[in-house]
Image 1 (cartoon, helix red, strand yellow):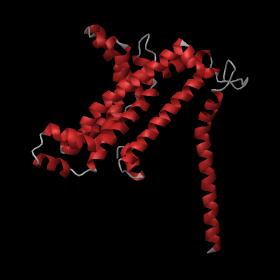
Image 2: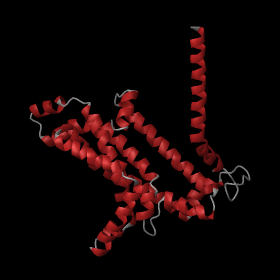
Image 3: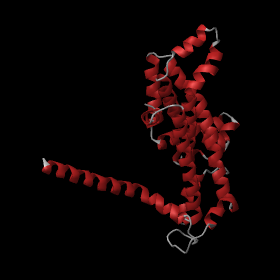
Image 4: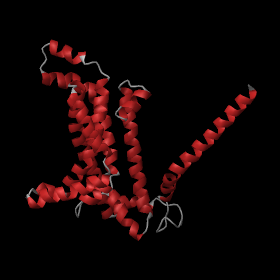
Length: 284
């Protein structure tokens, strides 16, 4: 019996050590970038001393400032669009079940698993066709292109999350509202939307974070003058990775972590358990 316990303890220790090694392998590069963002040198490969000057580049250098603003603006608009369309789709799937739901879920799954490079290659000629061949000027605008490209995947994510939220809610609340002579529109605004609101907010924040680091689609559909931050970083690697790039990347990482923390907080304040939060954020 004692040998079995000793063997079990040894196994637990080995698993703990392995877990530490795996997490270190995954997160040490991020830690290195964060530390490098305080480097006063010209390139990250050479540490010259501690300095906050790289963070000032966010304000002082127009190219970096414009790239960050493009990413933030695109992320907010794409998140709003994805939240609107994804919420309507999620509510429809949860409250109007039928065979069509499984076909629609299959379509959303196809959007979710399609490689970004395929989406990017498909979007570029389509937007060129709409903007130049058909003369629809809005599709020549860089922000419009980025918003459309970023919101495709996010709409599917919001749809999953809202559907998962409402499937676990009692539909009799909406039926009671109808029994009290409320119109469908009033029932939607007073009952259905408040029930789905935690998932809507979670989907909005997740859509925003997904847009911030969208590189492949952005690199294909962007036009001159609307270069988002990830594409700017990619192009800057040709001349060497500079500390200001690491500094702004650190700021963007903090924004992402804050958004994810807000997602968990919104769902927790809505009364969800940790399991429910993980299920809702995963769209399960």
